[in-house]
Length: 372
Image (cartoon, rainbow, N blue to C red):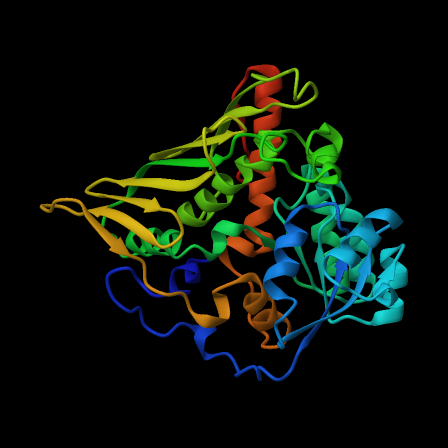
């Protein structure tokens, strides 16, 4: 079981929650920049990170490790970065720039090697979702984190959605009753269709480097949210995948549905590279009401004896309002990772994804053990 203190992280959609342990962490001086290194540039999310955060004074980019020299030069030129901070290997970057934390933007398969390198230097990491391509790699990452006594965080865009927090708080307040069914929709028209960078597309469509196609790329969001909401692993995982566009994606699935069963609840995770538009939303149905997220900041709620209402979700705690603030709170403020970004949660996410891949391949339901 995950820890029940997950319920105390943020404000409720209906009313302010009591102050949580995380909001009483020592104040982090904004003038103290966190020295960060970046490992890998092939994950397309790195561009968004640089665009959104290079201007910030509370972080300092001190090093970038990327073996592809041409890609390094492209990114350096695009973001006006000095060539002096670029290195061909993670080890070289860590030794010569001495970051306080490392952001991982490699393909998913390489997460293990980067975490193991950072653990040898005692450096915490935050990687782009998902944690790993297999249970074997997830366990190796966990072991490295324990040896190096480091924090391992997994960054999902949906972690910073006020709407998801509002739905979670309604569940924890028992406002909609016990969860009976959750439906999560994630995806877009397809990575090629939305014109992701060629170096990103190359590994997204490689079953070894990505773990699968849409199944891993977008199935991970629902697995993460459901593990957080239910505070436990599912009993069983059943998945169906398809290649609707084999001419574009001949090696991986582009359509996936994962069904998770719990003793008294069920989740349907719909991951797709075939949506007519980009979407990341969730429907949570309880015994007496429901909460449906609307984009990042709003929620539709129906409570017992009431009509449905659209509500703005409450702001998140500043320390947990985006990935940089969260990383700073963990590294500089000593905050203990919990919930969506935590290694504990994401070990279960990997179990779900690994089982889903096995289920889709065999046509059988995979039953998870409860002995972890």
